Image (tube, rainbow, N blue to C red; front, top):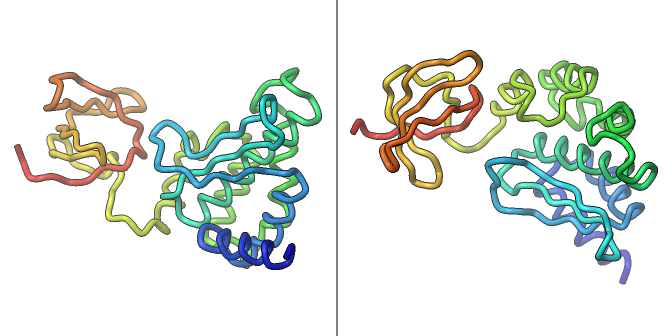
Length: 208
């Protein structure tokens, strides 16, 4: 029965992570007793970790719209949070040196061309070395990962000024101009201006 359950869970994982990473990832999930949830897209985060304060298991969620390489990075990122919580509780910073070391060690057996394309590895190495708090805050890695997305969305930084675009929630915007590191955009729905990260994903729309 256990072998059957393991096979079922690994088959599910293989839909979201690179095939050669499945055994490593599943071993971590079993070892740490992780309840893994595949979540709907969340704009503000790609994954999260919650300790077993009111539950018997550690809980990790990862967005279901990530490509397999982004999914794997996000999952390992969250498992690193789990390991730090088990060792230090809330006594250290969320993305401090303890978390950075754990993330690097967990990623070590996965840093090869069987798990990631050779073109991605330099960006991931840089990401690990600099200790970014999230993939989204690492613009170079985000751009590199996006090449493996299956969707037709593009980055706001690649959209010409004055272009009309939409978001998945249905809102329509006009790109205005760049303010320091972000782009100012006007929303037709509520008549307000918003700032967008350069790597925000948008859909082109018919001019309004």
